[in-house]
Length: 199
Image (cartoon, rainbow, N blue to C red; front, side, top):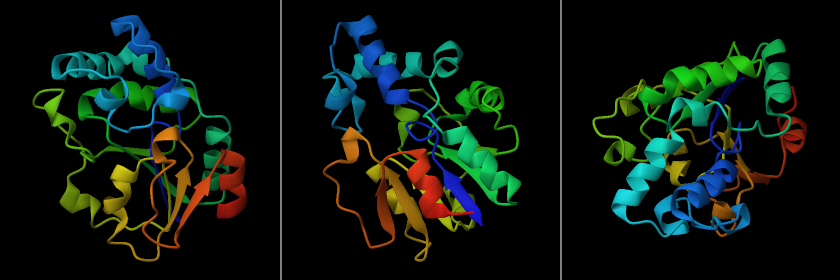
């Protein structure tokens, strides 16, 4: 089985860290449960300049390495690997974040997963002249049987795979979204992902 796993808010608790960062940088008290928009400038009420500063800070190595693992993520993924499944982490982070992202995975026992930086969200606008290690045309040649994702903004990246099972990790910014079809299932933990995906 070929498996796609998103990084932020699937493998690690990025939004919880950004909640603290918003308070530290701008005095914006936005609890995790109130991050109702994937567009963080909207959730934190930031202007363009503040949003750029916010995202640049959130992608610096010391911050990326500080993100807490989503409970159970590495355990389930290593079970998949031990069963011979092919796991790729497909992140919307720019390639400038590749090395600390790779280090985070290695520190959490995920040395054998592949890591690709795909421009899912057009975020070249906040880190100028960003590069990505995976171009859309190459991504669309990849095949997956299962995907773990939290962002409705990423759902269009699955339309070329009509039989793909998509497990949508429950997060405040996807509470109101409509799933494209019956292949999408809301999940609340990596234990539920383990049960649904099987081995």
